[in-house]
Amino acid sequence: MTTQPARVQAPLAELGEGPVWLAAEQALYWVDIPAGLVHRLAADGSLTNWNVGQPVGAVVPRAGGGLVVAVRDGFMALDPATGAVTMLAAVEQDRPENRMNDGACDRAGRFYAGTMADDERPGAGTLYRLDPDLTVTTLVTGVSVSNGIGWSPDERLMYYIDSLTHQVDVFDYDPATGAIDGRRRFATVGEGDVVPDGLTVDSDGGVWVAVWGGSAVLRHDPDGRVRETLKLPAERVSSCEFGGPGLDRLYITTAAGPGEQAGALFVCEPGVTGQPGHPFRG
Ligand code: CA
Image 1 (tube, helix red, strand yellow):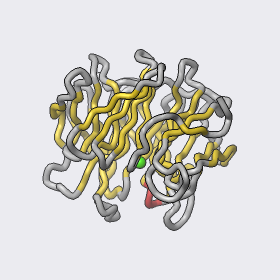
Image 2 (cartoon, protein in one colour):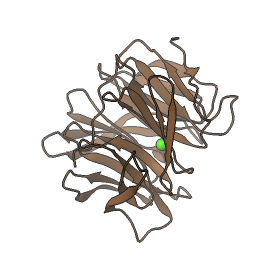
Image 3 (cartoon, helix red, strand yellow):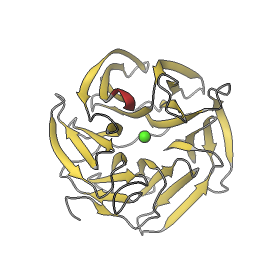
Image 4 (cartoon, protein in one colour):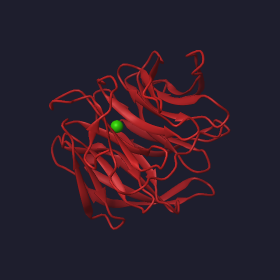
């Protein structure tokens, strides 16, 4: 495997997003948002997908088995055996022009995911937390395009991207309660149509940010400085996540648009390892 991103044999996505590695299955899951598809790539290269019937912004494993998806209508369970989806917690049912977007679980199994308006209207989105008891808590309002979420290795910091601000922000994080506080700027990414999208935090605390419109993934040191740039043959780079048996492969999703491999899934070995992903524990 190369240190530079190479294409993985998988279908081109309209808007590939939300890669997540399931160690128990040694499989990668990701979504194609407008297509309503959840994709799975097994270690032997075999592919499976499920159509959840509405836009899907994120997928995470569920501790008791199966998957949880953040979709247009809220948080739903997806049974991979049957493809059936069932509502766990509705979100913004009074706002049909909004849908759920990126999300991730913390170590305690709380699922954080936000919303955005289909027309990306500024301020229309909200960041939510789904707790294991299925209660939904509003964390941040006035969000434009709620995107990447990740935690420092000691779980004292939560990184968060509202794409249209061009900022990667950071909160103080209380792992005991899941509360966030003290929002501040961690890094600024891009200008104009070039914006930060998804993110993941490696085991050394480096913050990897997918740059939508920028054909790149940036690794920031914990102090916010850019340490490394990975270039992609697709302009709309949407998200990234570590996977593989040693958590040393960085999987990168992209969307249709400019670039000869737009919409492809990529992988590389950048020389560091990721943190293990966490399931929803509800
Ligand atoms: Ca995104």
